Image (cartoon, rainbow, N blue to C red; front, top):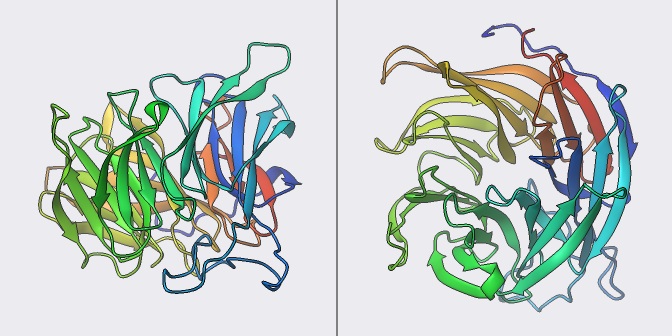
Length: 381
């Protein structure tokens, strides 16, 4: 699978235009033909020009600095349920559910896979249920935990791997929060970054929590196994990334290794024990790596795994992470496929959780042109 030639351009098999700009997407892990899109709409406000909170270079819009006059809430959003039709892979819209604020992130629960959590632009975390058993599949709102200031954006979410009640959130204030949304409780609020905290992830064994911020820092917190004490900051690396850290993905076969993405267009292999970069590759010329998602890793071949990268202006990439022989062996990051059919920022991409014999099926979207594309990738090519 590893090669040195440029990856072939991938063409969409279906495309459509959404009603609002998409910010995130995720397939249901159990009803794998269904996926949910979250949207982020900037509303016009009288007296504030064309729009409020215009997009900052290379990132989703955020509030103005604390010393500037407050701007009225100008964001709205919705959750849009789609299904992929067998055969032609047409994405059919089933339901649009309006939300009280914009949606920045969403994830299905690993503990109750019909439920998913949503990060909002007004300091809340909302819980929903996706029911696909009835004749009419539907998203139902269960609960909204209004646990932060309405001027705070919850930028990303991560479910605790072993405790179903806990969800961590990264905030526009730079903090990381460990929350129990069902109890409307913030258990721990952790200062992590001097600027926006764009992303976070638990280690698979829930012993550590990693975050990335606009201050170029990759930060590790140690989690008390008894849950009695607040997580403590182990270290913060501000030297390895030359721009904001926007994506963190644990390598599936070694908890010491992370795969990171950044505004600087690079994907890096990072050794947490040595606190150094083992390999890096520019995968998004003219773009920036906004999100990384594990496609697959094979237990019978722990030397490689596939990653889907949402690369903003550069579109989507399918990457192969290759680990050569030995614990200290060389690493490679290989671009296997590139989808460049988007005309604006690709923030949202996901892979259907099963294969149909004809390769991977990917849904990717772009922000300003509101374009949803479905495309295939043959990993054996």
